[in-house]
Length: 228
Length: 344
Image 1 (cartoon, one colour):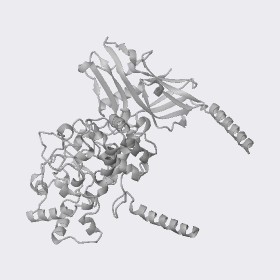
Image 2 (tube, chains in turn brown, orange):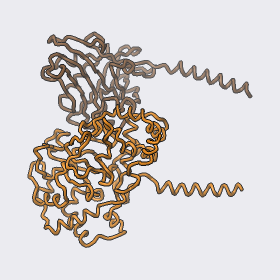
Image 3 (cartoon, rainbow over the protein chains, first blue to last red):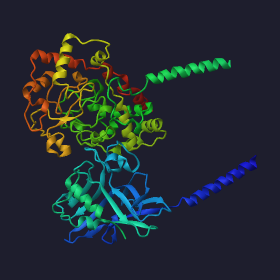
Image 4 (cartoon, rainbow over the protein chains, first blue to last red):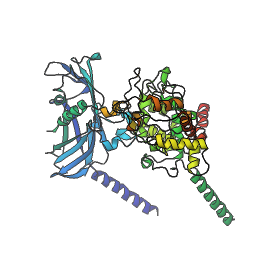
C-alpha cells in the first residue's frame, strides 16, 4: 500500500515538473522611450526642440483586449482583460503570453472600452485604488502623463495629462495595430517625444476630463507606439 | 433512535428552507419592472450586505473620520439630508446640491442629480473624494479598513479572506444599498387591493396621473430621465445640471427626475433644496415655470390646478410614505457590529 502511494507521489511530481517545463511563456514588453533613450524616472529630464526642459514624473496607461494576429486573422485573445502599464514598476511593463503561437501582428486597445466602463467596480489592475479612475464622473483614465516643463505657466511648472472618456463624442479609446517581425522578443516602444513634440506647453498643460482635446491627444499617443 | 434523528433533521431542513425564503435580501415587488443592476456580477449575500451596512455607517470613509454615508443619507429621512437646502459635509463645508434620497437603487440607470455616475458600484467614489463631502481617497479608505480590527474580520466573513480591496469595498456598499427597497406604502397596499384610498387621496391620484405621472412614472415614480422642470437658475450656484457632464447644450439645466416615494420625509425639495414644502413645489409647477430652450415639453404650458386640487395631490403624495422602509431595523445603524468592535 505504502509503496503504491510513493509511486503515485513520484509520478505526480514528475507530472508537475513536466507541466512546468511546458508552460513556458514569452513576454511582450512595453518600453517607454524619449526618442532613442529609454526613460528612467530617476533621471527623466530631456530637452525639447524649443529648448524647454521636460521632465516626466508619472507615465501610466491601460492596455486591454490584447490580440495576436496571423495574416489578418485573430489567433489569440488575452483573456485577462486589462493591464496597467506603470513605468515606475518595471514588472508591470511585461505581459506574458503563451509560447508557440504563430503571429505576425499584435493589436491592443489603449485604454478601457465602454462596456467595462459601465459595468461597475472592477478588481485587479482595474481596481479604483490604482488611481486610474475618475471619481466625480464615472470612467477610467486611459493614459496619464505628468511632469514638469519650464514653459508651463502653472504652479511649479507642472503639467498633467489625464486622458479618458468612453462616451461619444469624447470617446478617447484607441486601437493600435503593429506588425511583428521577430516574435521571439516583442518590445513595443512608446516614444513620448512623438507625443509631446507638437504640444505648445505655454498653452496646454492640463487635461483632466473627457474633452475633444483628450481625444486628439489620445490619437497622438496611439501613433507613438512602434516595434523595432 | 436513528429514525428519530432523521425526522428531526428533516424538520430542521424544511424549517430553515422556509426561513431562507423569507429572508431573501432582494425581491422584485409584484408588477415592478426588472432591476437595471446586474446582480450576476455581484450576487447578494448576507455577510456582504452586513459588511456594506457597516461601511455605510462608518466615518472611516472620510479624511478625519467624522463623516459617514449616513451623515447625508440618514434612514429616518428616506436616506437623505433633511433641513438643509444644500447638504454639508466634512468640517461643515457646504456642497452645491441637496443630497438625493436613496431607495430602489437597483432600478436606477444613472446616479447623482446630473447623472455623472454611471453605476451604483462606483457611486460612493464621488462623495468619498469630494473635498466638500468626505475629502478622502479610496486608497486611504482601503488601508484604514485593512488596518482596523473590525474590517479584516468582516471581509473574511464576506469574501473568504481578509483582504480589503477597492472593488470589494464598493461592491459591499452596493449590496447594502440594493436592499433599500421601498415598496410598502399605502399606495402599494391600494395597488395590491389590500386597502383603498380615501376620497381625497383618490382625487389626488387621478390628478397626479393626469398632471405628474408622465415624468414621475409609476410604480417607481420616476422615469429615470433628465429634464428641465423650469426652475429659474440660482445665480449663487449657476448649476447647469446634466450639461456639465455631457457638454451637450440640449442638456442644459436638466436634472434627474427624482422618485416621489417617501417624499413626506425627504424635504427640502429640488436639486438645490430651494422648496421646503410640497405646496411650494406645486406652486412652482402652476406659477413659477421659467421658459427656456430645454424646458420639458410637458411643462411648456404651466399646470392648471386649483388650490383644492393641490391639496388633493398632496394627500395622494403622502400615501407614498413607507414607514416599514423608514424604520426597518435592517437598514439602521449596525449597533451590534460597532459595539462589539468597540469592546475588542
